[in-house]
Length: 387
Image (cartoon, rainbow, N blue to C red; front, side, top):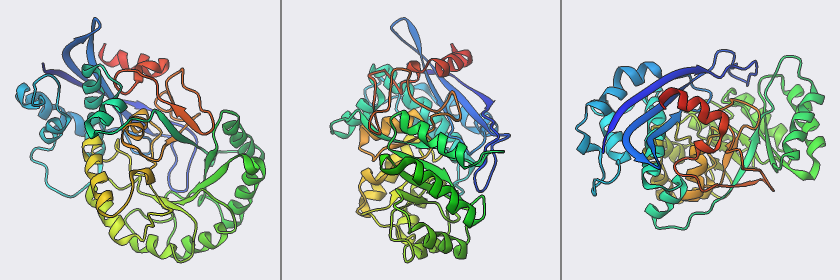
């Protein structure tokens, strides 16, 4: 049993949308394939992965460093103790050979992208959905029912309040009970008007979360906190720079409602510092670490261990990214749910074709691996890379 190839292609996921910090007009993603010599049901086992939106494709790092470290490692050194499957932890260690600690920047995205493909291959070799494999390894019961929310509400050329309201109504019509919109890319008075327009549209049928994408300084973050506390929001997300823990901690004095952050923290060490210094409250706040951006599931397991040390439940985690990898982690390890992009970043976002949102939840299908084969537009692109 061995990995015989690792392939990558950088592809566009461009869109005219923008948030408070960036636009997506030139956004890309890396699609990777980990090709094994294992055959299941007459087909070679190939694990697939890709990086989450908001960070660009990682082809340079993958081809310059991480791909060769996997392929040059002795094949037996990458197997589990029974030698009947790949070991993601050993493969992760091979990828990180000769890497200094710290500097959790773009390399964490490259490793996380490859790690996703490794876990997809491991679950396929085992003949199980990844979420069930994860639950078994943790000695817990898998729950295939996962809470999901609809992320949207971006700034868009010519998009008025009527279009914003129609977008949010569309999410409710598809079964979502929590929707999210962007703030911070317009003056505060305009954002207040946009928020009130959405709240008038969704009424008591759903809750609204807002996301500033790290745009605010302390003064602006507090001004928004004072404005936002007038409304019954699901959360106030990423007000300031991801590493400005003092700003995050200060906001809790002005905003009693739930806050969310963490999508731009890329290691268990960064997660630990957020919990030490960021003033996050385990009874109401949410953590959004995204395994596809932060060295993968191998590192995410370490992050969950850090959370436990600080008294946080995995159920307070709702990862960023809207991809099926985090859906499997949520179902297998008991997270609080997952982000979803019903209309954006396709074909990478969304769910397998048979999955529907009902009452704000989806039910995971019993597909081997991560479940990419159940999404027809996505698996078509994936197989063009490696099959």
